[in-house]
Image (tube, rainbow, N blue to C red; front, side):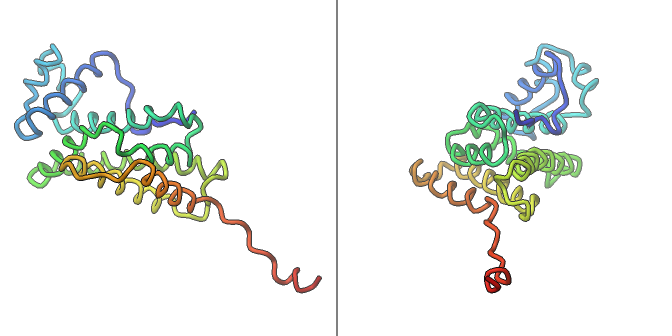
Length: 209
């Protein structure tokens, strides 16, 4: 089964509570107005418990965003347990069906990062972690022969990440979406285009026959 936990540290029950509380507070109040004290109150702990694990709310945001992507991948993993191209295809076809509430967290973080260099570094690392997970799926597809190994993993990941971000933003502003069957047809073509190309015939051998 595909491993989608790149960049996500293992956590105990308290860690999970902290991230759930942070997600709630960030979603309700936005990044700038959220406080570590309120997150601690929601989680039923002291602020010291948070600072023993995190440098501040920027790191909490990073983990909250990382968890959101893993949850999205795991939601469709049973349909494509081996990962690779099939999992990328499933993620693409179900983009509009996913919970994009994390999009608010991401946009809040991006806007706030213009005024906070530490947060800007955290957001950049979050993107890098997400792209590392997608890269694993692409490399699995190359290994099992469903993605052309000649294609750039970096370029495929950049395309997929940009597509996902665009859908998140579109849903936040309630932009209309295409019919599911029409969207699936487009994803079929896009993912199919990444399949290995058949070897070109050897013209020298053909002419010599």
